[in-house]
Image (cartoon, one colour):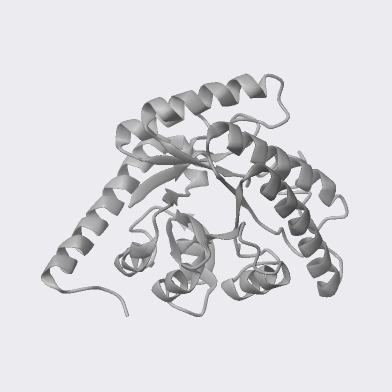
Length: 285
C-alpha cells in the first residue's frame, strides 16, 4: 500500500515542512489540498511555488494527488461555496481548471472534486447543472491529460456509489471521470459493508481517502476510535495501486503525532493482513 496524508491536516504547517514531515514518517505520497496557505491557485507567485513543490516532492520520493476541498477557498462567508450546483458555478469550474494546471506542473495526474450540497433548485435542475459542469471539466481534463477523481460525500448531492455511478453514466462513462472513495464515508452512509464498497468501486477507483468513522455519523476520527473494519477494507483494496491518503483535517493541532500514529496503525493492520494471507486465513466477507 502507498500510504499518503492529506495536507488539509497540516494547515498550521508551511507546505514544504509538512511534506518533509510526511516523508520522514515514511509516507509515500501527499494529497495536497489547494487552499490559502498551500498552493493557492489565485496567489501571485504560484508558478514558482508549484515548481519548487514539484522538485521537493521528487527529492523526497513522494507521489501527489491534488485535492480541492478547502472550506473557504472561494467564499470567506460560506463553506465550500460556490459549488458545481450553484448559480455561480463558473467560479468553481475556474478553480478546478486551475487545479488541473497545478496538477500537471506538479506531475500529479489526479484532481479530486465533489458535487456540493443540493441548493434551492429542483433535483432535475441539479442533475443538469452537475452534468454540464462535469462535462466542461472533462473537456479541460482531456486537454491537460488529467484524471478527475469524483468523491461521493455525506451531505452532498452526490453522496453514494449509486449516485456516482448514475453521474458517470450520464457522462457516457468518460474514461477520465474516476472515483475518489473515502473508506470512512462508506462505513458512515452506504448500506453495503466497506469491503463490498471497495470491490464495487475498483473499476473506477483512482484515489482513496481513509480514516475511522462511526456508522451514521460523519465525523473523521483517528484510527481505532471508530468502528470501521480496516482489515476487510485493506484486503479488498488489494487490487488498487494508487495512493491511500489519511484524511484528518480537524487534527492539525497535533499533525505530526497524528500522522505518526496513523501510519503505524495502517502498517500494523496491513502486516497482520499479509501474515493472514501467508497462512491462508483471509479476512472479510
